[in-house]
Amino acid sequence: MRVREFAWPDYDDVAALWTGTGRDVLSRAELTAKLARDPQLFLVAEVAEAVVGVVLGTYDGRRGMILRLAVAPAHRRGGVATALVAELERRFAALECPRVNLLVLPKDAAALRFWQALGYVPQPDVLCSKPLSG
Ligand SMILES: CC(C)(COP(=O)(O)OP(=O)(O)OC[C@H]1O[C@@H](n2cnc3c(N)ncnc32)[C@H](O)[C@@H]1OP(=O)(O)O)[C@@H](O)C(=O)NCCC(=O)NCCS
Image 1 (spheres, protein in one colour):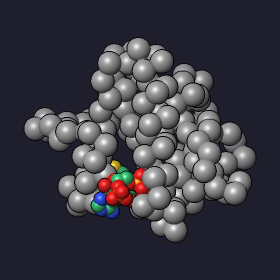
Image 2 (cartoon, protein in one colour):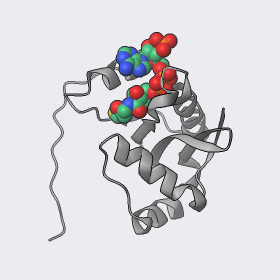
Image 3 (tube, protein in one colour):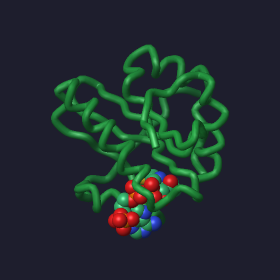
């Protein structure tokens, strides 16, 4: 297994991974904007040249955020997500990012167990959100 930065030929495979896990697919335009800021934080995992995992990190200069982690069902429990997050954490550290946050849906008990296994601790804060468009 190899973890590397996303490249545009990966887009369809990444979109399929997100769709397969019930996530919205970031459009090419959204990803273009993201890649203009911190391309080194958008990673894929590949096995035998097939993309089997993805994670998208962002850094605003104060906090890191981890989004859209997904591993293909046939490759789960083999350490793919752990490897993706470990590489992403190394890259956050290289940016001197002191803390990383992420969101887990309440129904995603398995995902929460994964994050807790990696040392991520649930916080009592309630997410508040407001759309600024439309
Ligand atoms: C959650 C997910 C990313 C884990 O990917 P993975 O490659 O299977 O994870 P790893 O093999 O690196 O797991 C590392 C450890 O996390 C824990 N873990 C992972 N999946 C788990 C599960 N389904 N239930 C309980 N614990 C789990 C285990 O402790 C595991 O170690 P072990 O296999 O030695 O017991 C994957 O199941 C997935 O893509 N799920 C759907 C999308 C999703 O929920 N993404 C996260 C959004 S917040």
